[in-house]
Image 1 (tube, rainbow, N blue to C red):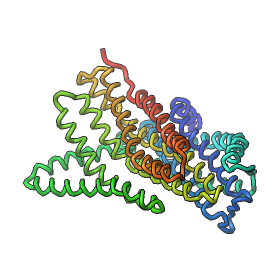
Image 2 (tube, rainbow, N blue to C red):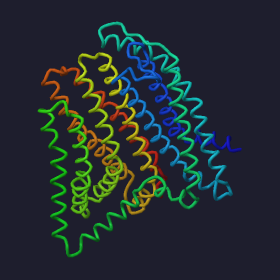
Image 3 (spheres, helix red, strand yellow):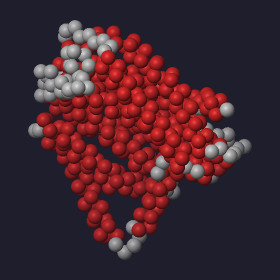
Image 4 (cartoon, rainbow, N blue to C red):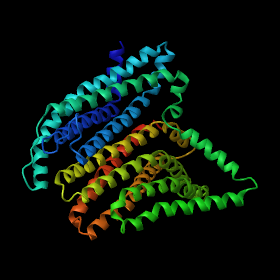
Length: 438
């Protein structure tokens, strides 16, 4: 019975199930390919001794990113099942039945995804060998070794264990009331809204002047921390990653002390003459708060790989792995942004129904969605390209990169985000779809 319900749920939520399955399949394929390359005799990664040096570290970092992406996808997939799980509890279901329901779905997808991922990796091997040989300027071939199979098996077993543990913990710690309140389960948005109300009320006390002074100081410090490293990178290219970490720390403060207040100010100014702007700016404010860590992760990962790439001119295999990791991470971390955003969007339907009852037309709601998602991805792209674009420009001016190759690297960063933007819009429109009252 549980197995039958799990299968029906997978078919009913095909789009969510497909992307969850696709994440498993891509993770399996990329992990296997990376280990096949890293354990090749030319690089020499082994479990006994780390003779691969930087190549081994890059491989392990790439595998870690693959695992993080699976956890984001699992979080999105499981939490969107909240209402179904709540109905099961109300109808007398037990914790063990909820856990069995989630585990059935996870294992069904895993059983299909892992073989497909391995077959996909085998099919990609000849293509990868040709591309890498062209990049290195000499023949480079890699095969399937025992070490690669063993390392991949360890990673996949770890993923199975942790996704099983997380799903069981989710089923155990949520009751029917919590699961029905999807906003509480999936995001911290309601907490953020309460916090903003509290802070707005707080700002009306007699300490406005001191509060504004502190806010201005924090904003100034955040701008210096965020923008300052860009001027230092040119004179200290060997410290690019450290300077980028300082910049991203400043970016965190910058969001809370500059970006959010500016959005609040715009919402205040538009509250009477542009209600649609107030709506999409309010949603955008929540989106930025939720996705700021994901943005920092993708920027730091890209900066790290580009730094390794351009400083390893005398080590072609290191350059090769760094470039491959840069491309793979852009794909996976763009997907993680999409999954994190979609987890938040899954609870927005009630807001749009309320706006519809208040007089918003369907075209107005669509404009709000388009404006919110477009502004979000423009913000993500502009913030990240401020650093990546500066780094590429510096390396091109120093002759470490050619302009055409730098353009390819930029496109390999932009294209996954653009695809995720399109998919996010499609999912968003489906998530808030409802029948308009006549």
